Image 1 (cartoon, rainbow, N blue to C red):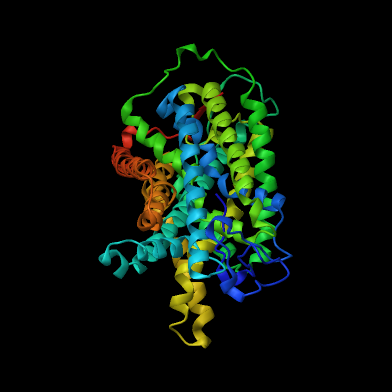
Image 2: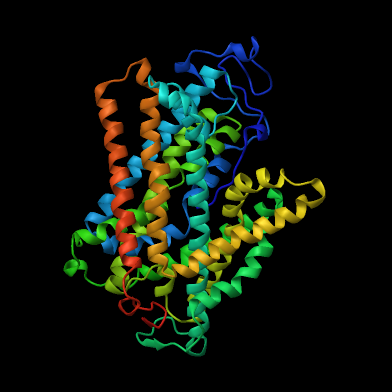
Length: 475
């Protein structure tokens, strides 16, 4: 996933049916139309529908995609894809809820922009409960906390992903050939532990995060997107060949592994943090609902196709990232390096979000003379924390499932339906809508609890029981 924190002052939006992108409402901010006809108008140099669609796709496609074939193994060849469809529909519905509630509060409080945390805070202020209204500011703080956990969790995943792929490429260097069709087991050359690779990468990641200019980061982001796109094309053209007979694959896996599927799947679908910033940045935000549904349909199709084809191709041998199953020939070693290149630069973009939440308030506490030094030291500390956490949990599949279960489920499934109830309950809601929202939140909460528990159980498993995924690769 790729995102950035875009604050309300970064925009020049006007919210009224009587306003054009070039002008303000006739009655100033009091010229808002009725909520049912409420529309958003961006500045003339805002993003086009095409650019917004690309950003939406970029915000939902990352390392989570590469872990979905293993997720399907944990759910079953039939139950897995069906669950992905259901989770995709629910996730997109929750994105739509968030946008609708944000529009409601923009109209109600005559604001140009409301972010995720602000929408939750205003939603709590709208409830009949006096206690919730008094503590509404905690809504913003809790959302901010989960955003920080989620983004730093992504950064931990990147450390593990980079270490696993680099270790495999280096270990197989002596056996790498030009023949990508050979059916043989490749013996790996002994090399250092993957955790040492993480420490080796750490200085380069720290230097990368010292880049704080978003225009410069956007260049690296574009290079990362190109690298990952080329890698995905090559991965697809390999896995569609020589698919074995799937008749002996289980339609549904053991129930104990399904929570691991849930964590990985929701990790992949958690792009809700980019929805409001993208909608607000558009030149014509009225087009956003169509873009959201079209973009997420493409994302869901991509998720299902790669997860199913990857599992069909590699079956029980599927690893935490499908790149680790690719042959040890120069072409696919280059694919692993290309995707690693893209993930390396994506780290800086993901890190920008928690850095902008955590660092500025702390820097403001020191004098301007020492502000730059404190800024850099805090960046070093945050990056080091993600590296240490990755070292403590060096299994890519468990890291992805844990991050997805703990934080992604809250942001993508639990908060939005509760926000809808808080926003509209006092104005009157149909009982079926309330029941639907409660069901989605309960589904997210159960996934949160059970998925986190199973991930921790797997994490606590004896080291001898954990197969080192980079020791041998069967082609």
